[in-house]
Length: 299
Picture (cartoon, rainbow, N blue to C red):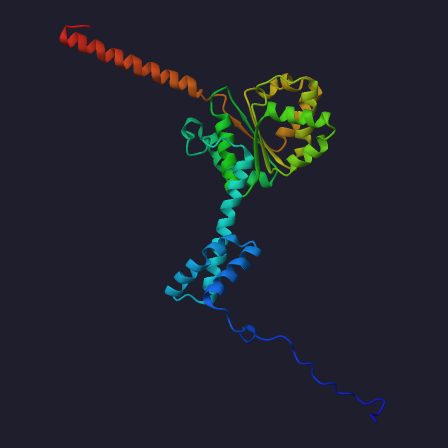
């Protein structure tokens, strides 16, 4: 018998954990192994690795890479593939004008101060801080182009964007309000990191339109960024919101945390093109007159 107070030594439990090497059983034939691995990677949603692992393995063998380096290369490729796929999806969902990027924008048309603001906006820091952007200028100066170009850069940085005319979004909100789904619509828009409202001053809003627009701006205040383009200076925003108190409240929410891009002094693209065309025509006329004088002949 074992004494009551004696310490009993229990047999050591046999561990079931083995080294990675000892758990490897006989591998299936190469052909089956390739198919099985492809199927497993697909089930794990590693679609890019599934499509490229054989080619990458061959390159890794030729480069004499370690197992860890090979795995690192596969993971890097998968991450890059997913990033590009996400960017493509966000770009499609954003409805941004595809041609309005910084590649096609003539930044030198703007003042140095405006250019500096734009360069800072391209970093995307304002979105993380829920800061608004208001681009004010006459028609044709490039307000929409600047807003869209910033939107394209934000998507590259991983942010979600929605580009829309103010009129179209207001009608969408009005329809949601009639269907008693305005809160749900606002919640859906809340998932958009930066909302770009083009031409907020282009159309005149009635009271119902004004109310849903104000509700949207109030909902996003200090939480989500909005980029607005307008041809109206703030003193003229009463044409949008009608009621003086509502106008003041809207401006306060938009401007409180904001970057103002003042483009009122910028000449419109169309006016500039007209001047260039007139200058070219004048030059052509002058050349023709000089030829006539030189030859003494005219048609």
